[in-house]
Image (tube, rainbow, N blue to C red):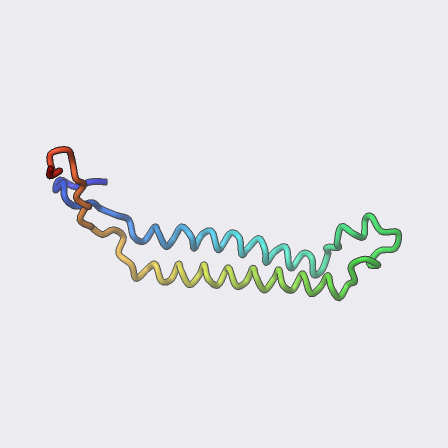
Length: 109
């Protein structure tokens, strides 16, 4: 978006940080919920295809995986929260000088 002065441009700064913070919230929230689900209610797909449940993937391995999902999700939510709080310190927009582009008349030789 250009101002009346053609040599400066207005650039959104806060939105550049808030967009990834929302992505971290969504991905982290989904992973954390999946980790909680797997910890208490879920089971590996290998149980469906094996003759004896929990023979291919043990409960210990499954809970370790669910714990990793939960830890990863909470870490992503924490990064998203940190970015969101930090974005409050940033200005909404800033003006920058637009780079000079050499045109046909600016060439020498």
